[in-house]
Image (cartoon, rainbow, N blue to C red; front, side, top):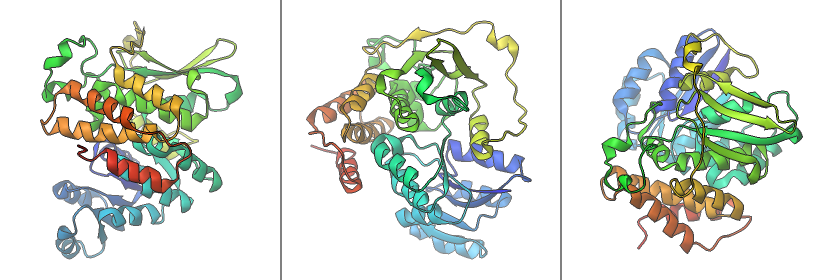
Length: 374
């Protein structure tokens, strides 16, 4: 029996993680959770689970929640996230969106808690610090993203020195078949209509711009410690092969599966073992698998990520923060779709890169570049 705590329990990943826990009560129990402002969803969760600690975003709702659920401790705000991260559990699933997940992830690592990582921004903004801290504390970081979970599984029992390249697949997002000229007129509704996956708003937009795939390249660099030139991306519209590994003898191992995040979540919770799950991939779906090389002119945000990875230092931190700001503006209807990449590129170009930054520098730059700079 493993105790699972969740940062971001009402989001897409958090909700699916709760399904995994609920469907396997003999293997998992829920420890502590954090949510944002979705109190109605929280109340639904509390009809099925009794976590010992719940963090909410706003202090104003704590009094009523404490009155309604006297056997549960409630906390709030940034400190609440740290409280959840430092509570006793076997695995902390970091499924909260944005760089706000960085500090609680580090807190859990210092607490020697295994991390099931679904927060891309943590490694994008401060990958060197996070992985170094995990190594110092002998803490496992198990990837939950379908692509990194696939790579993690393909590399199980293999010698990393024999890897020729990691191949991360990309569906292409909502606008994969549109030209750059056609992107001029796309709407928010269009952008949120992902062809293969059901995800939260920000990650769906990041998928449409291909920033999400750029984040995954940076994540892969930190998780598997390979040079940038050994991390490739390809378009694979079917989203059946989630990633592949090519070895120095030219043999390849691929991980295949349905577009169901519960599979990767469950594997992160059970690793190194597996549990039965009833959502098989039909062989009829494998009759044709398509792959195309990435076009960096068409998908500029992916090129930005490779550039940031090559530059090192704080450029990836700035890229992530600028993207967080720009996507927020797009979701609020303040800018057009293509202006997202314009803002990210402009802020990356204006930044004086800092090598080997400490955590305070990263947090300061994150706050600066995701603000409404003039």
